[in-house]
Image (cartoon, rainbow, N blue to C red; front, side, top):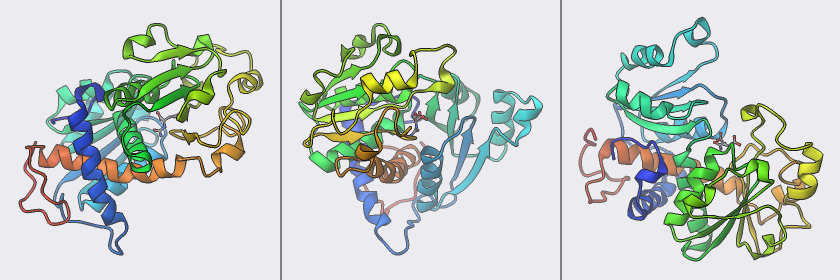
Amino acid sequence: MNHLLSIEELDRAAIERIVDRAERFAEVADREIKKVPTLRGRMVLNLFYESSTRTRSSFELAAKRLSADVVNFSAGGSSVEKGESLKDTVLTLSAHKPDVIVIRTPWVGAAELVSRWCSAAIVNAGDGKHEHPTQALLDVYTLRRRIGSLDGLSVWIVGDVTHSRVARSNIIALRKMGAKVTVAGPPTLIPRQIEALGCEVRYTLDDLHTADVVYALRMQNERMTEAWVPSLREYAAWYQVNGRRLRPRQLLMHPGPVNRGVELSGEVVDSPQSLISAQVEAGVVVRMAVLYELLSGARGETPSPLHPTRSPQPA
Ligand code: NCD
């Protein structure tokens, strides 16, 4: 694997390989010294043109736990504010010779473009409403840890699917792992032809009780150029996942940040059915596994990340 630009690039075996490796890295998080020397001397550049709490902090922590050097760049406060383009910013920062660039931008396809401009391995940490592959990997990891195999599992993804890169990457990843995916929301927030990704579409939550897992999405107001729903109050009345709609046997997921009182009620966020904190925790080990995969190369063998038998080679 040279880059991670889209979850489409990974087949089921590759997803399983990354998730398996993340499981082995989970042991590091339980140690008193939460660090292994695996990527010592390597450099990870976090390039964030959009706000982020979970993704950015977990990439940083993942790189540090593998002993890599980390440079964090955010567009705010940089020369981007003085008009520097994405290309010039990437070329400038490439002078520091990063081994991996983790990039988040509001532009569809930006990660792919960056992969053509420099020699570093690129990880797409979100490109507009297109893809967010590491979120999908950490969601697969979270579900697998909680319930084992995803084969035959029914997952409902509820909310603003149109503007959600998480929805796209998750539909693709969950289908590859054998789950049955249904997307549900108001017609304005379900993109046309989404069924082509292999999911079913519903415009009401009448059959939500059939789901094993309910995956709620945030209303992506920052990507909306017009009013897509009459009001958040009306949206909540029809589509909020709350104690009345969530059955006790169902698991609840959300990529964060949650807008309490809109897509989820506070009671379900704080309920034992919620996997939201487990998803955040999974973010670190899954991103460790992705960095490892990119810098150590997947060549079939699976050396223990805790006792590496050889130095990582460039991908
Ligand atoms: C998501 C994102 O930025 O795509 N958050 C995340 O990475 N955990 C979802 C969102 O912003 O709603």
